[in-house]
Structure formats: structure tokens, C-alpha cells
Amino acid sequence: MRKLPPRFPSHHPSFRTRFINTAATALHQNLRTAVPSPPLGISSKAAEKDLIALIKSCTKKSHLPQIHTHLIRTSFLLNPTIFLHFLSRISLPSPLQNLPYGLKIFQNYAKPNISLYGTMIRAHSLAGNSAALLGFELYKEMLHLDISSDGLSSSFAIKCCVKMESWFSGLQVHSRILRDGCQCDSLLLTTLMDFYSLNGKCDEACKVFDEMSHRDTAAWNVLISCYIRNKRTRDALSVFDIMEKSKGRRPDDVSCLLVLEACAKLNALEFGERVRKYVKECGFDGSMKISNSLIAMYSRCGCVEKAYEIFESMGNKDVVTWSAMIGGLASNGHGEQAIRAFREMQRVGVAPDDQTCTAVLSGCSHSGLVNEGRMFFNVMRKELGIVPNLYHYGCMVDMTGRAGLLDEAYELICSMEVKPDAAMWRTLLGACRNYKHAALGEKVVEHLIELKAQEAGDYVLLLNIYSSISDWEKVSEVRKFMREKGIRTTPASSTIELKGKIHEFVADDVSHPRKKEIYDMLDEINMQLKIAGYVAEITAELHNTCAEEKRTTLSYHSEKLAIAFGILATAPGTKIRIAKDLRICLDCHNFAKTVSAVYNRQVVIRDRNRFHHFRDGRCSCNDYW
DNA sequence: ATAGGGTTAG
Image (cartoon, rainbow, N blue to C red; front, side, top):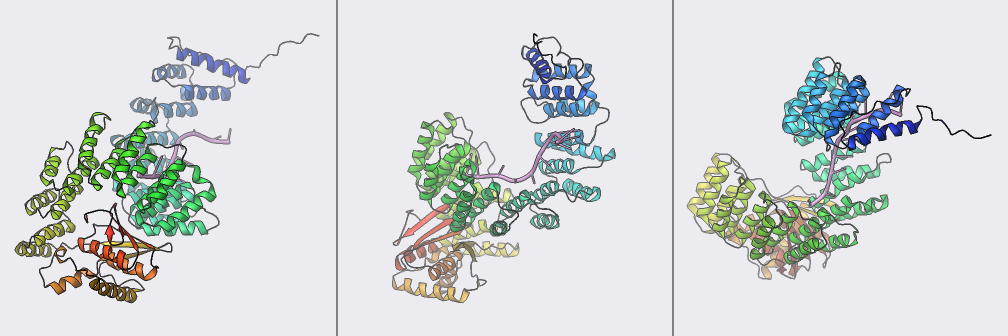
């Protein structure tokens, strides 16, 4: 008996495939013919599936109206699932996105449900600031229609509030969440934590975290990122500690990324190495993001060699990898090597971006390569087509300012097409101090006042200028002004890591448990340094007081306390690594130089983002700043 | 099996 060819029932997959193929071909050929109807006899569930596949396979904007017509003709547009898919396709970010179109058909839809609202709110939260405003309106409209919010729609609404930068709207959403009873949704609460964190409300974010009944890894990660963002970096490390020790929630790759950033900020090399070990144990070490942040961590802890090891071991290197490496070389004082690395990057065909350029320019400024920097600045604009931003200009101002070309720096700021910010003026003010240029310094402070951005530190720099040229009248004038306005200086702080623990000092600090020993050690060091011929650099201090008094005030700068503690706790021949949030002063620079010789320690001080490597009485950079 | 989803490198 002859075998009959098999007959496919109409719901058989091959029918569906054929339908989708015909439809897709019709679309691809951009024919005026309408999309064919699904074959008769296909169950509606199967037809639904086909249509979803069709919508998903569509890649051309011009095909959307055809699908739309088809959906109307076959009445499938009334099917909520189909409608949602179609709406998502045209509203959410993709090459097909057409948000106004999406909004229009959404508004024409008879009975939008919570999912449809959620999708629209999400689409608006992703589309930009003015769209976010509309998204929040949709959320309110939804509540007005007595559709009570669910976890997802509320979290999208919070995203809108973040984009809108509307703190008050976010609070409204939070109170609504409490009313509608979504307090158990950990995703929603994580979004809420991030909202508080982004608004600088660390305590509120922690409160949400504490009250969560179920905390998953993402929630813990947001807590870490919250601590980092809100200057509680050391607490971020503690969170990692807790996570690592707990049996349930182990840190994932994102936790590691965040904590490595914290280590970089804190100069916490030992902790960073611990994270590296953990990363390896978990098998995250193949991740490009992880390797990139390890490069940054090592660089920011002053260990370019180790950063380079990681860099070398990587099979694939992207822009971020190269920029991190170039930036690391730059901040550690290897300007020429940074430029060489940049050329190598171009040679192997990785396209540089704006942050790569920032790294190269900062290398030029840190290593005093003024001509190279100027040349590169032009190349960047003309050949790479990168429009200079505030950071690029900042490097140029810093570079010319360090070289003493103060007027050129001032001219540059005035000629920028972007509005200078306070940091830019502050860079120039620092240069004015270094070159004792009082007239320009005054001008710069006026610009800062105009921006309403003047800080205590700015007046201190101005004071430094006046005292360096012995204009004591002006010094007391500024001091009086500061006293009357109640402008108080925030003390600088220095951190030092010992056995994986971070110790923090501020000037005249008495809070450390070993303060007696530290101050004794400082006295001893001062004695030793006197014998070695060290004389305190007194012009750096501002008071017009007798020389003896000046010397005592200078003695307890935070970095000196940290150095004293470092010598106390380490053996000769070791490396002491200190990070400081403000610029190191000339006196402390000399102090570190002499200490490195007398006490046989390598001292590495990072002030803001630049390194000073002290060894055998010398510093890697010729001038102190 | 049930749409839309939180944290993330220079």
C-alpha cells in the first residue's frame, strides 16, 4: 500500500511558519498588498502566537501601519495581549520607536488596563525629560480611573519622577504605594530606594531597606550604590563584608563592580585584592566590566603595574578598557606612556571617545606636556570630531595654569562655547595661588560669587594668595568677611588602609583610638626631621602670627596624622598609601619627602586624582602641586 | 506557561 503524503492539520506549526513567512515577505518587499489573514481554522490562541511572532519580527518602521491595518481588519487589535505587544513595539526604545503614535493608539483604546498603562508609563520614563512628565500624568490618570497601581506601574512612575527630578512627585508615589499595599514587592522597593539615594536621602533609602520583608541581591546592591553615591563609601565595604559572610545572599558580579568602585575611591588596595580573589572564585573574572573596574581600582590605588597586568591579560579590550588604562597611566604621572597607549589603541582600531580624550589630556596636564596637550586638543576636535566638553577644557585650564600661563588659561575659559562651572574657576584659582597672582585670583572669586558657588575653600585659596605675598591687610579683611558671613572651612580628611581596614583622619583629629601614640609619634618625627634639617614651610599657612605658632598649626594636618599612624603601624621598607580629598599643601609635601628618607618608607599620597610618589627623599613630580 | 521590570565598568 502506497503511503499518502502526510496532511498537516491547520494548527500544525508548519502552517503557522508559512503564514509568518508570507507575511514577512510581503512586508520585506514593501508591497502595497495587505498582510494576509491567518489561515482559517487556526485556533485563536495559535493565531495570537503567530501575530506576536510577526510583530516581534518586524524591523522596519514603514511596515508598522500595514500591521496596524491588518490588526484592525482582523479585530485582533481589541485583543489585550496583541495590543500590548504592538504598543510595546512602537513605544519602547527600539529602531521602531514612535512614541506619539503609540500614545495616540493607546488613547483610542477602549479599556486600557493596568498592564497597558504600565507599558506606556515605562515607555515615557525611558524617553526623556519632557516625556517623563507625560508619563507621570498617565500614572495620575490611571489612579483617577480607579485602576489601582501595581508594583510595576508604580516603579515606572518612580522612574519618571527621577527623570523629572521631582522629589515631591516621588513622595506622592511612595504614599500611594503605602495605600495600595505593594509594600512586599522587592522590585518596587528597590526602585524606591534608588529614588531616595539619587536624591541624596541616604537615611530614607536605608529605612526602606530595613523595612523590606524580603531582600534580594539587587536590593543589597542598591544599598551599596547608595552608600557610594552619598559619600558613605566605607559603609559600602561593610555591606560587602556582611553579604560575603551571610549564607543566603552572596555578592554577585554587580556587587563586585560597585565595591571595586568604592575601593578605588578609598584607596583600599587590600580590600580590592580581596574582591579580586572573590571574583575569581565565583568565575566573574571573564567579565569585561569586572576587568575594566579592576584596572581602574589598581590605578586609583597607585598600582599601575598591577593595572597593566590585568590590561595585558585581557583578550578583548574595548574603549572603556583603554580609557581606564590611559587614565591610570595619566594620573600616576606617566604622561608619555599615556600618549603612547593612545596611539596603540588607534593602531589596533578601537575608536576613542570623549572620556578617552579626557584621560589623554589629563596625562598631558599632569606631566607638564603643554605642547603635546595643545596639539592633542586640536586633533581631538578636527580629526576625531569630538566636541570638547567641560572636562576637556578643565584639563586645558589645569595644564596652562600649572605652566604659569595664567592669562592664556583665563582667555580659554572666556572663549568656551560651554558655560564654565565652579570646578573650572577653582582650577584656575589654584593656579593663581601657586603663582601668587592676586589680581586674577580676585577676578576668579568674583566669577564664583556670580555662580553662587563660592565655598569656604575658595576663600582659603584667596587667603593663601594674600598671605604668600604678605598682604596682611587683605588677609584680615577676608577673614573678617568669612567670620561675619559664618563661612567655615570644612576640614580636609586623609585615609590610610592597614590590614584591610580604612582609617580616616581630619586635621587636629583626636578621635582615633590610638591618638596618644599617633601624636607622640608625630612629635618624634618632627624632632627627627629637625635633626635632618627640615624646616616647616610657614608661608603656606595663613595666619599672620608669630613663626612658632604657625609651626604648631601646621603640625596636625590630616595627612601628617595619617603618615604618623602609618609609620607607627608598618615596618621600614614598606609602602604607606594615603588618599586625601583636597590638595596637599607644600609643607606636608616636604614633610612626606623627608619622612621617606629618614624612616625608609615609600609614601604614596593621592590628592583628589593625582599621585605623589615619595622615595628616598624625592618626589616623582618635580613641583609640589 | 501569562505581557512591562530594580542594581552595573573608564
